[in-house]
Length: 272
Image (cartoon, rainbow, N blue to C red; front, side, top):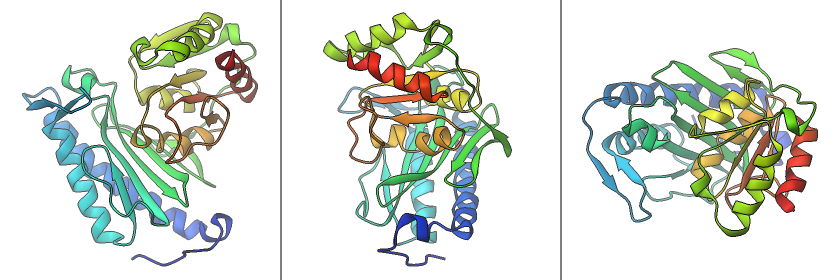
């Protein structure tokens, strides 16, 4: 199944046939992950603590395990970067970036505001992303050149006429310290509402036009690579806090907006 396109520009190699192939494969991965999510959700589950203090469950490992197994079988020359296991061939032209359960604390608590994130990065640029909420049966998928869908139906971000009308989401205020905390308070103080604890689900809501801004800090590539194509192909803007494109080497500060003007305004507020 794997074909070699190494060395060609992204615009030349990321053809519609490739898009369809990778979209179909990403849906298959999400289907497999969803079966495991539903089997474990709101059931007794073994939980341990990783070195960074974050929790991990048997479900996290089982999901990432099956996704890696299927990627290796279908695309042995692709790389994989996941949250639970070591990086594999991350210098490859194509790298799949996996977070088996983004929002593990919500998952453990029985709250369905979590998701499986599946991203595909080509030459350092995220080109395809999936947010799969298997319990509620919601799947956002965005791919360059094809738009963003929710359960197969096209979605788009909404305009926001002023920062004072904006609904802002972030995972939690404890993400921010020092200058980042002060920057986020400036942004939150200007928004109409600030809401917490939706993790990746907030970015799906943004892509569907229900909220206007999502800001995060201290994220890893597995937390954000899948989100980039979903937001961008729904008509939104997503970048780091300096306005630079996101890739595997970004610093983990993320800003997404449904409206380009509000994105520019929010960047200025974060910069002080």
